[in-house]
Image 1 (cartoon, rainbow, N blue to C red):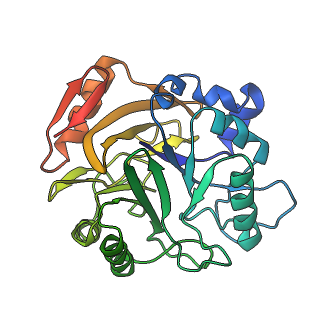
Image 2: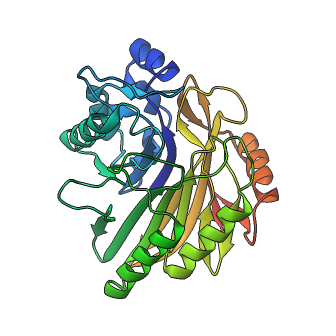
Image 3: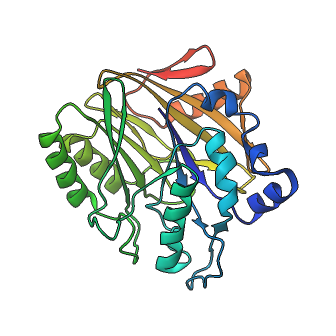
Length: 302
């Protein structure tokens, strides 16, 4: 199971797509995505094709629905909507995004359906492994269609779920933190620890647009921010990101790996061995209670 950061399909990325097509963005990473069963990215834009009025904010992002077809064909199976851009075009924009994702075979996560309030987790199952994927935006949000329970509420949800489903693995995707900061805040660390204590098996964060600290807490991994995935911030450090890759077996996390990449014209390109070693040394310098070792092309965490 692979986790990727912010996927944004407007502005400079739109220009790249208009010139080369959306499949171009996956040209370097498709072989990697083909090796995993499920890939989860944070969809940092509305997906709509009908005229909508944007809300009053500085940055609003919108992508074209037909672009979702090659995105799904290239391996993205799930997208989180609990972020600060899913409501850029109001409630109708959220509803169209959900509908369009489902139309093209991508499962949206982190929203409240009209018939199911409370932002239930997505359930992912294969063979003998069962996963509950929770998603929340800890930034201030007004749209009640998006998942935005705070840490205490989310902890209670996880605790209740684990009580009913003790064998399920619980993953939590969080949109949080401070943009361009290399480390999380003390409040984030406290929040992450509370979620692990409630029963989360791993936390994957995004929003800061840079890769932040990786921490092992009580044997569980916390990725405070995995950075951008497909984005038009083509300058350092925003043009780098990581894939967090979990190998799962029989409701256990067998191993956790990291694959770093650089973005060029919004396109992720896996780092060379030399670039990768330097980058992971930098990440290791701000990370806690982890050992990072090279295992072929993957960096494994211990």
